[in-house]
Length: 262
Image 1: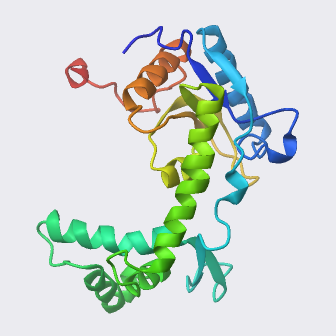
Image 2: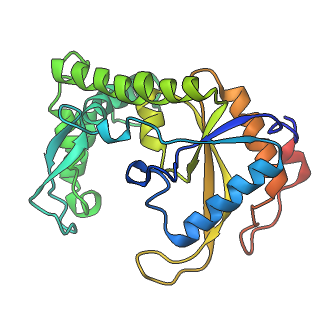
């Protein structure tokens, strides 16, 4: 870890002032959020980073036909109850496969061995377990669980093409980037669909949510890279953290013992 690790780094900011219609990640920020990110970009520049402003070309293609599916919303507390909701196809299919593998290979001290066991437990304890329903579990349990369905394979290939090949890969290679800077978790979908790493660190504080007053809470900056770039991302995030010191200790929480950091 190097506090000067940002010096000379090329950081992509997917926010092109000349193309506001495609400013997917920064265009939707509230004024307080936008201010935090403006300060973050300024801090990067002060630390010696080269800022490249250009929109990522493919976000609008993600979540298109064939990559999401309708799941009936039976959440009794949802305003959209009894209406179909669109859910990523890959998520629905991989949930059963991954959860079953975890329960089979890793889980201990539990009688739950499959997703079907969890669904049955929830139904048997509906008053405690199903306040919000289990629509996604039911949809996932209806799949084979082995990722062999053609609709899963097609959706996964489209995700890889839009998020990875024509998305982050093309964007970062074209502009020679070390990382892409996203506000908070706004870039989570494209990174996850590409299978690429991200690291988030505190960038500042904002207040308010859904027009309601709230105390200040942290708003982060996320550095995303390509495959196997974890070491570089940690170097960049550490240098940003050291140059801004934006984190505040939560009220009433004692500092960690120095031994915990070793």
